[in-house]
Length: 171
Image (cartoon, rainbow, N blue to C red; front, top):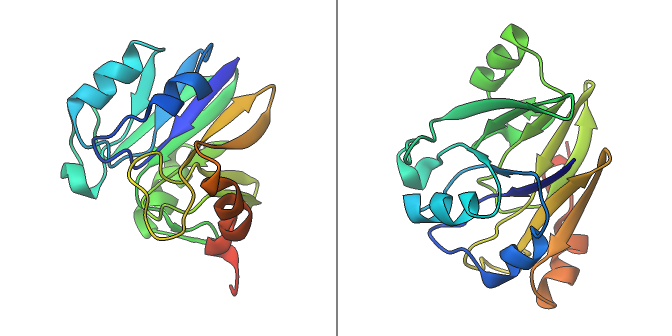
C-alpha cells in the first residue's frame, strides 16, 4: 500500500503534489486545508482521510478536528495541532489512551518530522502550501512501512535536512 501524506495546504494544491502522489492508494491530510476544493482535488487522486486545522475553524467539509483510519494494518490518528512528539497536547494523549494508534500524523508547525516516541511514530510532512520562512515545501510518502519526505521544489531539499525533527531538539 502506498499512502500520500500532506498538511497545511492553505487552499493551494501545488501541481507537484499530483506528481508526488501518482499511484497512491490513500491520502492523509493533517489540516489547514483551506477549502473543500482542495479535498475534492485530492479525492480525484485517491480516497482521503483529513482533519481540519485552525485556519479551517477545525471543520472543513467532512473533516473535523481528529480522524482515525487503518490502512494496510497500520492504525493512523490524525490531528492538526500536536505540540511536540515528546509532549503532545493533553487531548491527544487522552485520545490515544482510549484508542491506541501506530502513527500520529500532524501538521500546524510547517516543520518536517519523523520520530518514534513511546512506541508511536509521529509524522509531520511539513507544509505543502505557501512557503513560510526557510521551511521546506514537502509531502511524505509511506510505502512498505517506510516513510520518505519528498521536497516539492529544489529549494526545499536543504530545508528538509535543516528542519527535520526540529520539534524534538533541545527537549
